[in-house]
Length: 193
Image 1 (tube, rainbow, N blue to C red):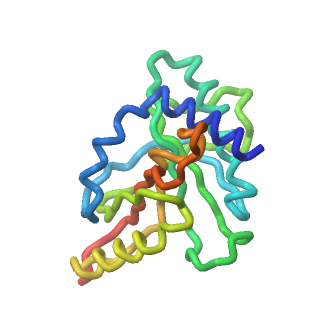
Image 2: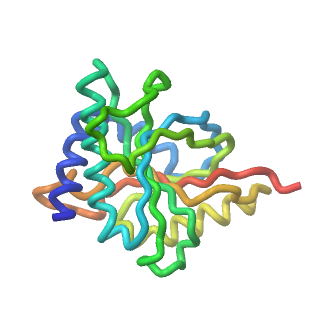
């Protein structure tokens, strides 16, 4: 079921913004960037992402496409998730905060949207980020590389682990090749004093 939900969501994502993947190649090496605060449509779940993620993603895409029907030209952005607990926390205790950027003029969600979805602002500012290519299960070396880059450049992490899912399950439905997944791994950072 999760695979079907994710496949539908990702297929819909591809139709909205899937042609822009090459623009992220500059993140093959870790970078310090600045990102403005972004208005987001958000849902929070607790538990193993393999169990709870599918429902959260389905909820997000359902609400987004209800919103899209009422706002002409609404642009689709990649799904993001913030993981506020340490990554070594047992997965059944993880908190996943899934979000999709929405335009500033959106002040409410359609009445039929599930009540657990809310609108909030995600603060960014200075961030350290890197592009991970490959399965989610093999992100650890990429995360460690980004952590070392942050330290080596005189910064410290001041925000949650965040992932932006550019390519993932369902985009390669005939082949489902995790080696081609593309995920931006990101942390808000600040200079060490």
